[in-house]
Length: 213
Length: 213
Length: 213
Image 1 (cartoon, rainbow over the protein chains, first blue to last red):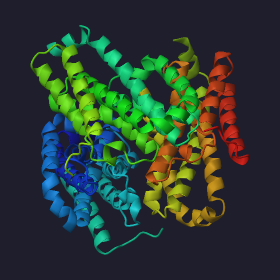
Image 2 (cartoon, each protein chain N blue to C red):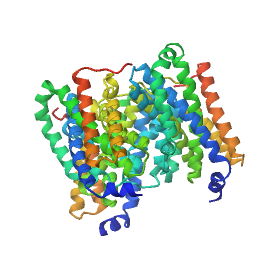
Image 3 (cartoon, chains in turn yellow, purple, brown):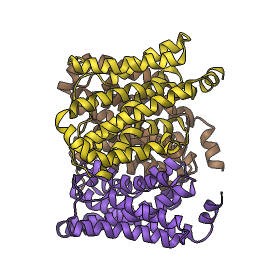
Image 4 (cartoon, helix red, strand yellow):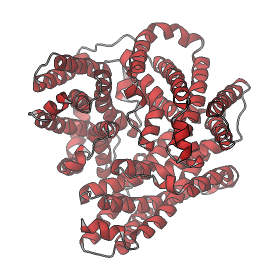
């Protein structure tokens, strides 16, 4: 009864808000890049970018029974993504040839880190146990990318190679949970968890680390 | 506070009801045709037809937190679709060779138009902003077809070609929103929006109009 | 008003609980086997196993608006599946070469039977009509496997061949509904329905029975 209140009060909401904004845009970009590869038109690009950006968070909110959804309260981002999708047909036509894969993986890693810890944190606020909270975190961050890949009929990136992906989210969520357990500042715990995930993911890709299959 | 009441009263519910019936059947047919192509058995055909017909509306209701679902209140359609699926193995075996693609695109265009505006309208009734309402409309109409294509392991039709699809829904939803903004009769606005979408979609297919990729 | 109460009282909850445990594990195993085939790492294997085991039940609960989810209340199974996923990389490496397909089909048939009748039963408890309840049962049991196959980018097993799958679930759910209608003991009805489905499915596979396409 006490923990959730502390979480709701304080600066946590603001931090969560900022992190979700960055994560939304990061995932949206990865959706736009992927949609462009499929030569999808502007509105189609928007649909993929929208699903990628808000898919994970929306499923998390449905599972936690939270309303209204993030994108319902912040339609500014919906419009921003739409404009981005319109511009994308011009901007990314160049990018997609040069840095496509790298751009996607980086944007994806940022979203992965942010959504994992914010999802875990919101699950804790909703009185979920640590184990379930970690699940919720992984679901929040992985689901958007899976929807993006399924919509583009690609093998989901989380399955395409054995390079750790959900694994990074899992580790970072445990870091976050651990720090929370140690009564660490929420802001510190969230940032530490997110940075752990993003860094781990990027290092895994950079050095081609693979998990044993 | 006032708008939703006006919407709930009046003849809107009846119109919405009729439109959803037509849309449900149109999507169900497209599901049956697709399932037949996959030589799926009767119950399997039903599963695909059911998902195609009710998938979009169900997701919309989950997002808007509306209960009970349309198909829970109108199980007559569930049974009708089931009978259709049983008959389909005989009926469509012929059709699927002759008009399959054309049948699917037409049925799909009708469902697209109807579900887009009804979804948008129901979102407005649920106090959503115009932007979010348009999103809900597109989700309602596009999701059923996407589920159908994913279940049949095809590239979703909305991605298969650059022929405008979500784009048509988007335009029609804007027409509907615009007319609503102009205080037009709900019935008029809904019909105008739906007809715009269906006509636009059919014209795009007929004349092979493509959006720039 | 009376039927649901009777259902909630009595030993039904215990039976449902036991059946869901077995079903969860059966589906989890099929998820693990499938994930191993894709050479997915431990956490990835867990994600697939988790989605397979809890996907159907979670969607059912979302549709019936039941909270908390089964896996939220019984996180022991979440942990069990996780440990199973870690061990899987060693255990199934052998199994996957020998009995993979057989293992999957059997585990899948058990889950199919259990989730179908429990889903139908819970829908009846939620005041759904028999028709809708059967739908819910099929959705509960089929959805997990579909998610598993979609995640592994395979053609969903329910579509891969014309061997009856949803059909078996449909028949067994009707048996369960029929026995309930005949005022049979809930336990009896549930077990009869589940056994009907599992047996039917295994017989169909064993003797290669196909439905006419």
